[in-house]
Length: 116
Length: 112
Image 1 (cartoon, rainbow over the protein chains, first blue to last red):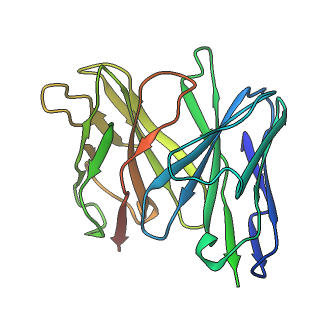
Image 2 (cartoon, rainbow over the protein chains, first blue to last red; image 1 turned 180 degrees about the vertical axis):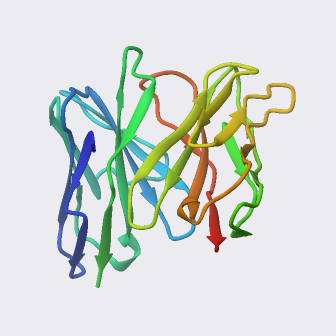
């Protein structure tokens, strides 16, 4: 069964509103989670690394004030898209490493965001 | 920086045909290599992996061998099924607890 969940799976919002996406590790603790963005027919691009109890690390070109990440517990990371615009429409995917050496990444099912 | 290059899709095959999806990478050191599969409407699932040179990962009839000399990790299956229709992503990772670097994905369609 799934070990990483995301909620919601799909969201449609109006331009200018904020949207929160949750990523949960279901039966393990994850001090680190990763957020990716996938454009249609494109690869997954890493947006940021979410660190429990500390600030997220953002990739170059990703606006940290627009994509707010909070990793408040060992099983939950949230990504908030603030003041969303149509160009933010995308598929957002989180992952969490698990295993003895945390060598295996488990991916959430993704959240499709459509901004009108 | 690190990068992964996959063959362009889409790939369309008849059932029971042989499948090869090429993947090459550019990276420093000795990364681990992965193939992930994304079925329609679902999230990414790990298909197979290899952690060092000459390792062969295998699962569900799919195989890929870590070739350091050619920096490749080509995915193969001897006889594809309609249920194998999905998008396949090649990826690399340097160590545990670090993010993956993905190729662009290759869409496979298998027709009966």
